[in-house]
Every structure is written in C-alpha cells, then in structure tokens.
Amino acid sequence: MSPVVTGEHTDLNVATAHGDWAHVALSPRQRQILTLLRAGKSNKEIATDLNIGLGTTKQHLVTLFKKLGATNRAMAISKSQALTGASVDGPVAIERPERDRAENISYRERRPVAVLCLRPDTKNIALDADTIKHLNRLYSDVAFDFDAGFLVHSGGRCDLIFGIRQVRRHDILRAVRAAVSISKSIGSALREDFQLQAGLAYGYIAASMDKDGDWTGEAIQGGVMATAQNEMNHAAPGRINLHHTAKTMIEHIGFDADQITAGHIALSPTFRWRAKHTGGQTPLVGRAPELEVLRAALQDHADGKPGIISIQGETGMGKTELLHAFIGQAEAARLTPDYWTCSLADSQPGAPSLGWLAHADGTQFLDLSNFCKTVLRQKTTPTDPLIIENCHNLTTAKFVELLTVIKKYGQNQFIVISHRGPLPALQPDGMEFTALHLKRLSEREMTTVLCNLLGPAHRAEKWIKQMAQGVPLFLRQLVSFALVEIENQRNRPGIIPPIELCAVICERVESHNLDRRLLHVIAKTKNPETVMGLAKSWPGDRNDLRLKLEQAVASGVVEAVTGHRRAATQYRISHPLLVWVFSILFLSPVGPSA
Image (cartoon, one colour):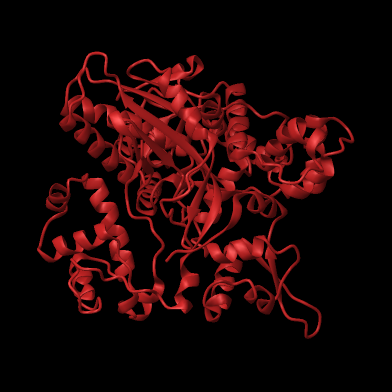
C-alpha cells in the first residue's frame, strides 16, 4: 500500500517574487494543469481530464498560483510565458542557483493534530473501481474545504489530518463535521444505505514544513495515525469511534454531546455539539471586582435599568469561568439567563461555517439573522439576562451586524457578551455600557490558586508560576501536568508539554504568519542573540532578517532586549512557556530540496 497525498505542498521558490522566472520549478502535475489552464479549461474540466478530484485540482491551483506569484488564472497564464521560453509540456525546472537553495529548506516539526480515519462498510455493498474513484473524490473535496492533509489507501480507505497546515484548537470538532459531511454526501450520491466506519484520535505527528508553514507532503509519522486506524477498525457502521485523546480534547475546549460518554458519535446530519462547562477546579480567584460589577448590574436590571456588559480577554483569561459565576448569581436571584455561544468555524455539522449561534443546551441553532429576529427583536419585555459568548468567532461584518441590532433592539434588556480583543464602538442610547477587561493574575493570586489545587508549598509551584505568567488556563493545565509528570521527570530533558497547551499556543503563534526559519533559529538559541549572531545560523537572505525580526517582535512571540549604552539589541523568545513548547515542536531542518 502506497498512500497518495493530495495537493502539491512542495517547497516554494521565492525567486518569483523578484521576477526571476527562469528558476521556477514546477512538478509534472503542475505543468499538466498549467497546460490545461492555457487551453481555457475550467476546474471541473481539468479534474475530469486528469482523473483527479475537484478539491485536489483546487489545491494544485493554489500552489501553482503561489509559485508564479499570481492571484488569478489570467495572471498565472501571463506570467508562465516567461518560463524559459520552453513549452510547459516539457521540463521547465532549471537547477536553482546556490543562493536560492536556503529558501527551500524544510523543517521537521511536531504538530498537534486530529486524525480521522474512514473506510466504507463493505458487508452489503461491493466496491467497484468507479465507486472507489467517487469516494476518493469526495474525500479530496472535503480535505480541500477543511484545509486538511489527505492520505488515500486501497479499498476506499483514507486518513484526514487536521492541523497539519494550521493548528486550530477546535480541529477535533472540525474532524467530526468533515466526517458527517462525507457521510451525507455518500448517502445522497451513491446509496442511502452506504455507510462509513470512522475512528478519531488526537495527538502529535512529525511532519516536514516549509518556511511559510505549509506542509511539504513529506515525513508523516506518529502513533496517533495507528491509534485512529485502530478505532476505525472497531467502529460500527455509521459511527465514529472516539479514542480517549479525542474525548479529552473535546472536553478541554468546552463541548459535549450525549453520545460521547459511550465513546462514539453517530454519522448523522442531525448531530450537534452543545457547550459544556466542566466547572473550575478551584473557586474563582482574582475576579472579585468583576463579580461585583455583574452583581450590581443584576440589581440595576431588577430595578428596571437595562444595560450591556462586555467581558474582554485573551484566550485562557477565564471569560467562561466568569460567565458561569454570573449565571450562579442570576440563578440565586431567581433568573434564568438565556445562554448562547457563537459557533466556531467548521465545528457544527450541517450548518455553514460562520455567523451561527448555538444555544448552550444544544436545543437551538440559529443563523445570526434569525437569532436577531427571534431572540432580540421579539423579546420586548425580557426578565432574564441574555448571554452571548465568544463573539470573536463571528466575522467582523457579522459582529458589527450583531452590535447594530443590540443597539436598536436591546434598550430594555440586560445583555452580557464575551470576546477577545478590543470591541467596536458600542454605546446604545439610554443604556449603561460597561467593559470588563480581564487581567492576568498577580503573584499572590496565583499562589492562592496553586495552594487550592496542589496544597501548600508544593515543589512545582515556582516552576508553574514562572511558566503560566498569570494566565488562569495555563495554571490549571500545568497543575494537571505537574501532578502526573513533574514529580518524577522534572529534571529529565525533552518532557512533552500538555498537548492541549501546545494547541492553544500553536493556534495563536501561527495566526501571525511568522517565518518558520526565524522561529527555528531563535528557539534553538539558548541565550539572547544580536542580529549578527542570528545571521550566522540564518539560512535565507540576510538582507530580510531585520524585517522578519520586526514582524516577530510586533507579534509578541519574540522579545527585543535593549542592552546598556552601546550594546546591540538582542532577541529571544518572549515567554518561557513558548520556549518550552518550541523546544519540543521544532525538531530540525531537513535540508534543501533539489
């Protein structure tokens, strides 16, 4: 069995950015696609001519456009004319000069991923060549739509890898949605009784990545692949079997479903996630001022004074914990808050990716327009507070739409919203508006939390506080880790951080689109280094090293340390937790590809 990788995620030659077209290297498949583009073929026609899926065709086009520095088909055709003057049907790849080889170094990295393994149930259905071809096209189309890695095996079996190109903390939910989507498509395109067996696991793989953070299509290794395949082998038709790593990650990001306790999920279009609060491991610490504001707002609401409260804070600052503490306050006042959460992209099966809100109990699921009509506009005399959580999951346009409706129809309501980052202007006439900005816990507050969780004077306390830097989520995760690992292995090198922690950090770091080469170089440097020091290990053009450093400093991932007097500025990873995670995730350069 030789798996086939969809998409051409090979190293990209940056010479195109400078018009050095003679050194663009195209794969044989990309040359074929370029020939068909010049012939005026549509995506569907290209897929048919080459006997590949539509999703695979789209992946090839994305990579081809990137190599050519093009943003559309016409530009790609125009720029391809400069490819050495040769026919695109012939070899157009020319040996790259030595100065460009460094641009093609790939890097082995550990990646926290969700692996979904699928195969058809063949007890009642014979798999002929056409059926397998149709299955593989469905797999590749979904892989493209979900930005997942795709490995196809014989017999209509495939593996989808979520997080290999960009880690999203909710990749595990996206994998379930993808499986439901494939199952639904197969039922409508082939036969209604055509069923899949699936397995889902979460873990690390080792993969080869290029400098821009794209998977090169090489070096897929990791026990999580075999784990997911084993779950698939034991799954009943029409179900996804969940490994305990998948269930743990689902619980970690705050979701649940009735079937999960049984260890499986039905591949049904009616399946829905619901928000789940597992409860804090310790009483809410460091949020007394915010709780007092919420209590006073409840009293104002009882006195007929409407208001809006926004809870702002970055990932891990305890927004959900504070919301549930507020729910406790409201219930003590004999009120039942109406609790909604903005859906994560690609998480809820059977619904568009963005602009949807789910009720916390999983009973209702509304797009933003219907939510505004049925929840906001029709509640003319509300008595219960309305909570809208995770508004940052909406697009900017959808968020503005929600705020506009709140301004217009929320004058007599008590509304609490939570989100990351700054909030667009929101000051409805006649309503009190209060913004609560959650700050990091102080040294004393961290000590209180750790005393509750670990007991007094635990020997890991100093290490945990240093690594967590006042972020409540990090504190809790590191405590769980310390109880299992630190006691016996603290002084052993290479301890793997909690995978949930790595997923959070990867998601935030990768959102800045930083140069992979720079992160590798700085992460492997034990002490702060000057630009000249970093340049010794810099594999690319040194002229752009300063620009890459400025981008990394602006993102907060890298810190600039100003020396005394005339000492040159030095650079280091900004946070000890990042240093630890990077030391595990970043393995080694693989070397330039010919």
